[in-house]
Length: 246
Image: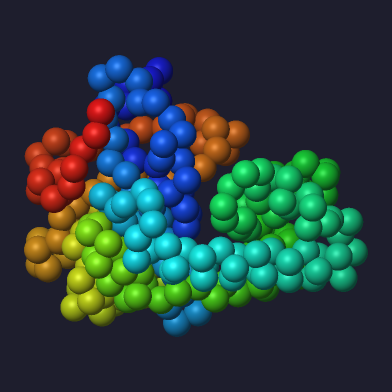
């Protein structure tokens, strides 16, 4: 991040805040504690960001424990289905990719398939083996976005809907506002110019703050590195709601 000149950042890991307390921000940088919670809505996976959340025990803890159990069960089922389809992969290989992470997920299965030489790339693994309709695909069963939003708020955080351009049904935004949604991730690398305009208008209509995020997971698959440019005035209303640390 220092090489890229990132000034303000959050480490929004899926279903865990374990990163906080385990890194030292470089000189001149600031950060906002956050988390990205996986949820399920009408059989679709929806990600809810929680900014300014506690990094210790909080109302979020029980929700995260539920999601982590579901993640482990899902990974075990995926491995079993892949084995039945003739792919030589084990749960141990997947957990090796997860390392010390609290949450195991499909990307760890994909990376294991790549490391074992079964798939050529993470994209190839998703496309041929673990994506929708493929032999290793297992639907996720996480908490609901409504519950995630309400829990984040009860813990003192700011609930924000992540990368809304990836939603199969954008009417979800209308449904989540009454449950306490406070913001939209308007600025996102895969959003088109039309997406950004649409979400700006949606944020304005519902009085939601705007945030930005690049969804960085791994330098091997995001070769441009971390960071994206967002106008300070667009983030100002959001930054008024959260505590920023140096």
